[in-house]
Length: 179
Image (tube, rainbow, N blue to C red; front, top):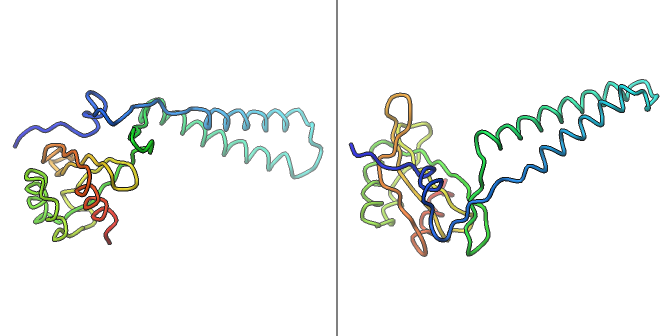
């Protein structure tokens, strides 16, 4: 089995001339944390003198604080960047489409030969040992696609990264949204 590069590594290291990497905006989680702190301060300082409002404010503050903290942690540690497709300005999304094991080799062949019409004959399956990982903006203009297979304890690339544009990208878009 060959060692192929992961799409996420490709985006992080080399990228593509039409893809721009931008840092995520931390304004939303920080503002949620600040609102939670303000709610706690208002409740503790007894500025609001109604019986049930302090309890409600504490519950809202705890919810905002936890959601804001988790969001900020994910932005700082797990997913620090967004990828933007420059011609349209749209943000990349990650799609995972599980495949029947028999169809995985067909898909690897389709990626290798750039014959994406084979996708019409490929069936989706929930939680199989193979999946198609696709990164791209909504709209079917540009995609990065790669087949991955389960090798104990992790999914590993089973095909090279395919850079798909034009009519082929529309075929991938239709396959992503096919029921």
